[in-house]
Length: 133
Image (cartoon, rainbow, N blue to C red; front, top):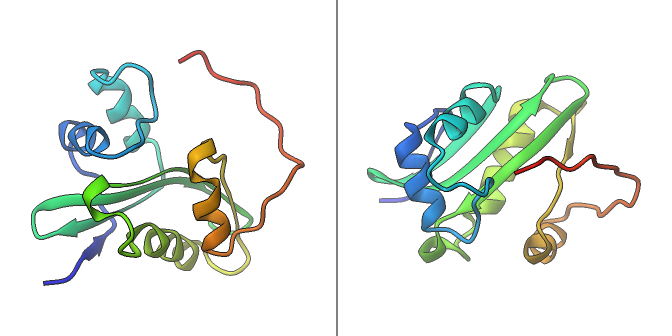
C-alpha cells in the first residue's frame, strides 16, 4: 500500500511522537503538548502523510489562499526520507493554495539543499524578529 495524504490534524501526542522520530522539532520544549496543540489548531492548512496508521510526514502552513502562504513546518520521519514525501507535501500545499499564492519558508540550515533540489528559489530579502523559544 502507498502513502496516503490527508488534510487533517493528528492529536498533539501523535505529532510530538512523530517529530521525535524526525530530524526536526519546531520548539525547544519537546514535552509542551499545549503549545503543539495550539500551533496546529491555529494553522489554516495542515497536510499529513500516512503509511497505514503511521504518521510519516507533515506540513503546517499559515495562508490567506490568495497572495501568500507561510510554510512553517515540514518534516518527514527519518526512516521515510528519500521517498519523495517531503516534495509531495510541498506540492500538495502549493496545489491547495493556488497559482496566485506564493510559498514562503524559513529553512533550517540542514534542509537548504532539499528546498533547492525540489525547485524552490532562495531569496535574500527576508527579515526576522526571533522568538524566545
